[in-house]
Length: 128
Image (cartoon, rainbow, N blue to C red; front, top):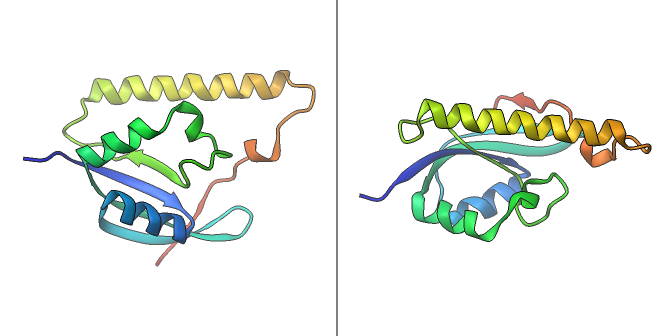
């Protein structure tokens, strides 16, 4: 049996379509959103084959998750599931919190302040 991992992906509609086609995502839900500053986009939930996720992860590194990166267009997240233990989710959340703290410290300690790409607003979710 091939592993299937539940994910969410957010981006502009063309980015989402490209991601779905490239990684053969089995989409379960799709909604429209407006991203800052007024860009139409979407968010999908679906399943990706373990092989496809491994392929994706082998192509990218930590810097690819930067908002200014063009190698991974959009935002990818794994949905909680039985294949990931509660401790693994806790560990990831801790690392994410540390990563954000480090980023905030760098912004605070920079004499120039935050770059426009470092400022993010909460995404507005609207019904499809």
